[in-house]
Image 1 (cartoon, protein in one colour):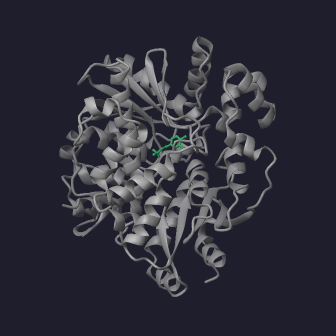
Image 2: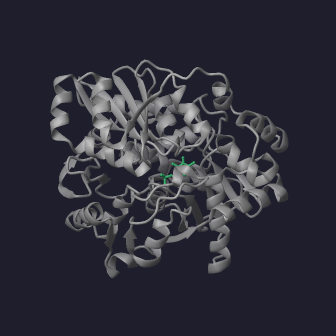
Image 3: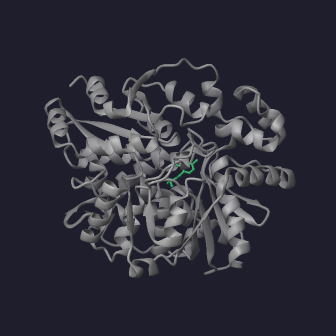
Length: 495
Ligand SMILES: *Cc1c(COP(=O)(O)O)cnc(C)c1O
């Protein structure tokens, strides 16, 4: 029997997994959620000896039930191949008393590759299955990493076009260079004058714009999303939590059934939600520790039950977490409301109209799996420096936020369970912030000289993704105001 999906704002209308992937966002503006979270149907003992690809199949087949074995295996094997610089795909590194799950070994050296290297395959397979004849236009808002990973995944994929919006001045220089040098006839990159939330809201509005949908259809196009609101991004992210647990077991770092805490540097709430799904599938995960930077809207939410985006948007050294509207939280809200779509829709309307909502005491009780924490810019820098000085290991700024929060949580709570930190980006990607955290003498140096210096002091190789942009030609220079995104899309598509 197929596992079906419904919108968080309407539980009546059900679609298959492939339909949910194609649409990205539900017509009512809600996010697609599975009717229930399936349980793993393989044992930990079996998972221990599985490769990343085998684990991916074991997990994803439970969610994407209308894909055939052949289709799904083809998607998995096309995604997790030599684009990754290690056969294990997601290596575990023990740093002091914490396990770092390195999710940055793909083509664009951020964890977005874990899902975006497979999404184009899932999407084109889904299009075939559903007899879609229109060209699919991927619209994506990015805080820096999604954009490049989506561009790399969709570049020159037949039957698709991709348009990426990023906040001008809101991403690192390396992130920007990675995007504006992107090759591929079907790729467009637009810098908007605004922040990530403006970009994300603009994209969401286009999805909900029925008029635009008609105009596009007449021109032979339909929209889909590569943002983590797409269930096709969330499901592949569940895989690495299952994989990490099984590998820790295989390496005898933990014992069977031992609970493992997980700390995730969080922005749009996709990655940590995947960990929550892994827990519900049966992986013995203890606390899910949600780490924020100074944009600590989620920390405050877990503290008080009030989600309030009415605050200053702070630009930090972990730009991929500079977010005040964490889209995927809606999926958790729906769950803790007891799958009450009406309640969810009501809270999301309040968020849209007033920028704030409060959950009920009953809903708060269901958040016991989570703990919130945040790290200031200074704590983030300290974490990078002290870890480097003690161990020689260099973390990126996002991972450092999580590492700092993990440490604070441990000492504040007395919870002695072992902890996994999701390591979401290569330090090369945020080179300037990382190197100046290690030593202020680097603050004035240029990016590419620092890259060679990082390679020297850490004894790691400069990733391919960085070498590629050293001398690459700039191919994209479009800019627009945040309220002109729709016009820009129409110009690009010539409709
Ligand atoms: C996207 C991103 C995050 C935040 O992940 P979410 O799934 O949006 O919570 C954290 N770190 C890095 C490096 C990222 O690219």
